[in-house]
Figure 1 (cartoon, rainbow, N blue to C red):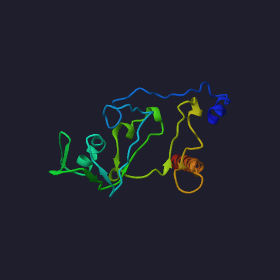
Figure 2: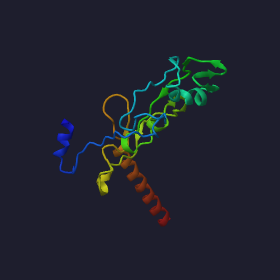
Figure 3: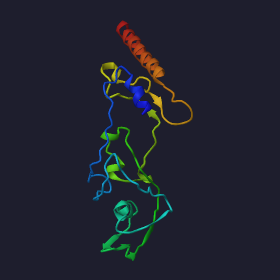
Figure 4: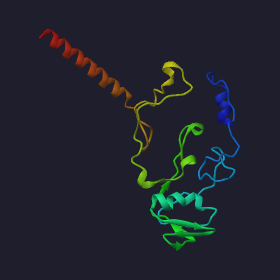
Length: 187
C-alpha cells in the first residue's frame, strides 16, 4: 500500500487500481478443472533432479509431460492405476531439474502459468545484457528507458551501462566513414 500511495503523488500517474481476477481460467497449466487463474495460482511443486514424488490421479496432470515428453517414459493410465514403462508406479523420481519461468509483464505474459515446467536442458543461455528497454506508458522519446539501455544483467553490485561507450563507438564509426568517403572523393 505504501508504494501505491507514493505512486499516487507522481504527476505522470493517472490511475492506480488493483487488477486481480478470481474467475477460473481453464487455459492455465495443467489445464484441468480447478479454481486457478493467472492471478491466483498454486501451490505447485517444482521438480528437482533426484527428488521423488508420490504419483496419483490428482497430481499426474502436473507431471505427465515431464514423465513422457522430457524424460522419455511410456505412461499408461487405467482407472487409478498408473504404469510407467509397463511397471505399476506409485511414485516417480525426476531425472533432471525443472524451472518455472515467469514473464515480467504479469498480465500479458505467456509463461509457465500456461505451458508448465521448463526442463533444465531446454534453457539455452542466461541473460547478460539489456540492449533495449521500453516503457509501455511512455510517450515519444520518453518511451525508451535510457537508464537501462545497454546495461548488464545479474552479477554483483549495481548494473553497469555501456550506453556511453556505444555512443562513442557509433560516433567514431560515422566519423571514420565520413573521413574515408571524403578521402575517396579527393583522390
